[in-house]
Amino acid sequence: MFVFSSIILFWQAKDLRTIKLSPIEETEIGEVLYLINRGEGNISQYQIEITDNSTVFSLLEELAERENFEIEMSFYPEMGVFVESINGLKNGTAGKFWQYWVNGELPMIAADKKRVKAGDIIEWKFISPSF
Image (cartoon, rainbow, N blue to C red; front, side, top):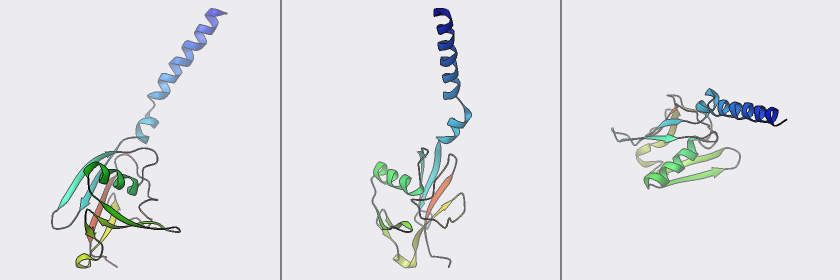
């Protein structure tokens, strides 16, 4: 009985090691490239680690704390977070506003609802709206 139990425990332990090293887990957690583009070539670039629950906005909050800059935002219950200011640069200044892009595309969803995945390139741009 002892030998049989030891074999089962060994098999289960071996199986757990395999699960911890699975490729699925490695792709769920990783890093993204995060850019804050203030215009006129003034771009800050960061690497930031993500988790399964990371959003564009949660990473911005994390960066603000880590890099010691302020963000201002408004929350609209039916839509989500609207970023008003990053590091003192406020929407409406010189007719420009903050927009975020993921992998070169402008999402049509609030930043707190846009989930990110490893390898994404996130960029906040302070630009004149195109619409």
